[in-house]
Image (cartoon, rainbow, N blue to C red; front, side, top):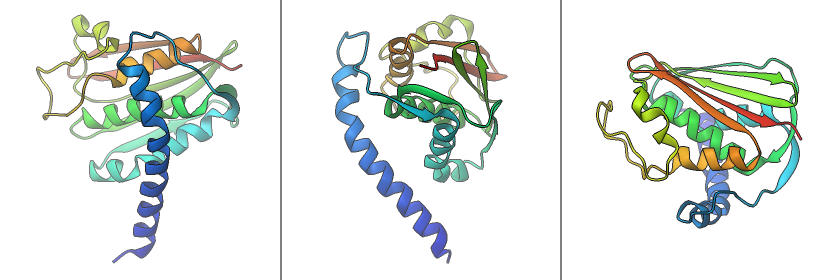
Length: 192
């Protein structure tokens, strides 16, 4: 009934398939090793555009879950030098988790410049994470199984991968969360 929507979704699927084929090998090589750092392919790009692209990539899932995603970019153009493909996977992982673990997802993505660091905050209204799990969620294969809204599939590699990417960029990732009140993940990554 809506050919423009079909064309848009087909384009997203095609682009994501090509992107994921390139990245799967990189990810699998790292995920199952004890390697703590990744080989980076840094380039200069606008991080705000990458955030928007990551949101667009998740548009079918956003619509399926009736999620609301709000962005607040502190500066109109935020040029950083980083591994664009890896950072995109990190953003997709964080946004997807924010949607997945909320009944009626409302996600706020805020950005800021703090000294030489570019900061991205992904805040959700999901189920939250108990204090005893907050340090462990970045460990390889760690999954919280109790209290999930539904059975979500995964291997416990997503947040571990996000942390490896941010650590390799000499950045930092923090989580603040309270069960029943949602979670806030903050990434700080050097701009060059």
